[in-house]
Image 1 (cartoon, rainbow, N blue to C red):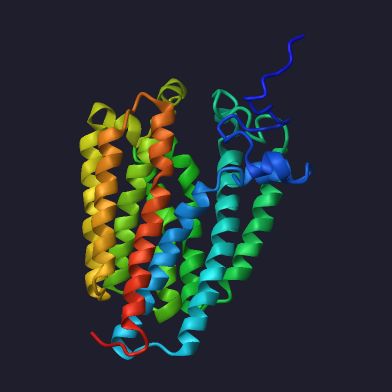
Image 2 (image 1 turned 120 degrees about the horizontal axis):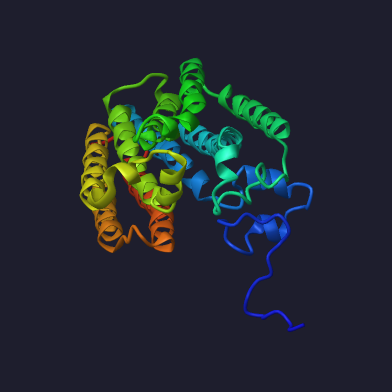
Length: 331
């Protein structure tokens, strides 16, 4: 028998087909934890980032607005750091809960698709009942995080559960499941602002709208990986709906996101760096559309993952403007 090539990482027991080989879960996590970490998509952390960034953006935007109105105290800054940490924990566990719930709902479909049949439930690593119990545990942790905020924010967070519950079923009935995902996945754009102000307003509404458009666009790119399987199973997506017109649709969605985010920044109001960041983001969106090949799964996945840099760029701009505001609140 020939020796295995040293250039190719050996597949690990239970590894998921669409997770990167050698990821930290497969390589380092305790063996007993791996099925549940895979169920929570901890081996693919891009989803945590995409859920977390709207929370952080809204938090920074909220403090930017507060700094302009009345300045910030040292207590405000400490609260901001604490909230940012809470959002990391909350985004991590609630993304895991959402993925586990989605896999529970889709377990029969996942078993029929090559890319997903190795996931923990269809592959038999985790039973459906154990998956639901895991969802409950993660949700309780998320609720513990949520109750650290003010009362308005707590109820706002609870209100998102209706969207979380219905999202996995949408691709059975509509070509727009990405819209429902956008409404669900970006709720943090409202929660982050509410954590600072205890209320909502036009700025977080625009931020949220831009985030929804952004999510429809990047998840359409992601969905192009599965469009043939979805068609064979009778499932729907914006990738199928847009078809050969995907690039014009993406251009409009990305442009709408930038305009909405610029409106939110203007209402805050931002100083300079946020607009510079948005210009860089617009350039990156142009690159995504121009280089996208919808018939190439690896190309689609890399463009989808590149949206993490959108998150960092916008956050950097907001934080730089917040630093300019300083403690004075001067316009």
